[in-house]
Image (tube, rainbow, N blue to C red; front, top):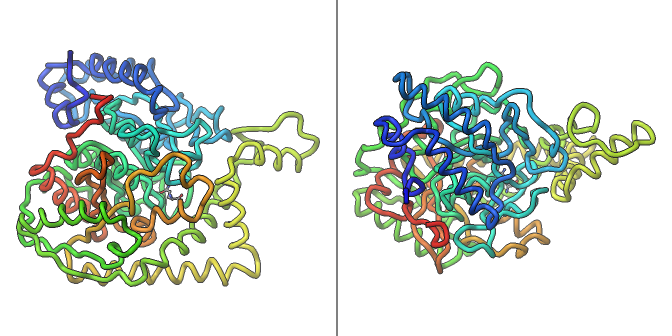
Length: 487
Ligand code: GLN
């Protein structure tokens, strides 16, 4: 029996480059794992078998010719929010159940250029709205560590697929925590880059000033390899930033001796589960043993982040989702009586409850008379939240805390209570509002359920985050754990 699923991207890369395995064999191996084991998880919406095998054959030619990148021949999965030419891109919604994109997202294209194979598209909360992956039109995703529990969201399909090793790595997107929270709940490593670092072109928009794509993988080193392919300026995205892309694998081996780690008191308050807190504390102690200096800091406006986000994100989504009108593409209702009926029924039938809730909140917040009271006020508070981080990074190099206040909760537990669901992102949302990068790294378990340590950096300090996470992973093997039924 092969054990390719136990290998990291870095290890698979070596096997491919030395010819010990072909991309075709590796791709087939992961496709068969998905076909045999995903029924339990529902982490994939589409398996792209034919395209994947064709791409693998091409990658094998490239590997023979020597014209390769470190990722050539590696199969990964894409969150179903990234447009993929010729493969359905649903965004987890009935609205796009029939949508086949005529073009590739820049992220997808970058991976293709590097010779990476697309295994398929992963399940997600509808239009990336959610923290549990229960809002998908295609049904809930299950957490591979305990299938009664949620994997987190909205990139829950990607997180579950990587945790169960159905794919060696996957892409995700993070608007308020959707890479870091599911990475934490599934025990994998995920990175949300600085806003603007990774192109949003072809990534279906939820809240444009917050959305950012990033890698979800087993290790920090694998995230670095993926970010090398993902990051960079894109003239097709006016918010992507023209700034040189470093080699993210270059600084992984720096010592963390003397690193100043800030612990915000607001991230260790009464909302945090005691057992999660103890696991996070142990990880921080380990950094102290590695020579890091621990500094108590304040991010005083943390409690404003969830309310601010739930004005800004719905406002932006209400504008972005107005394009789904039943006319140009996507779902169209049967036999519309007139144009108004076409709009209202197509949207009414095509969108799920959470998406409708957000559109209504956002439309209200942007309407005449309320704009100043809600949207403008939220934008002002957003500045204060960003300033908290700017101030903190004057005295520390990174900030650490939990990625989620609890481990994975049960499916159904918060589904009827939007406020308690919204609060599960209390430690991740401020990072998106400020636009700084953040990671989640597996650091242990509570009763068999994974815990993620969040590491937050200053703008464009992805290399530092990856270095700090990698150093920890050199000394621990939490990132190597695989749930029993997927070993
Ligand atoms: N859970 C948050 C929300 O529901 C964040 C989602 C995300 O990051 N895409 O909006």
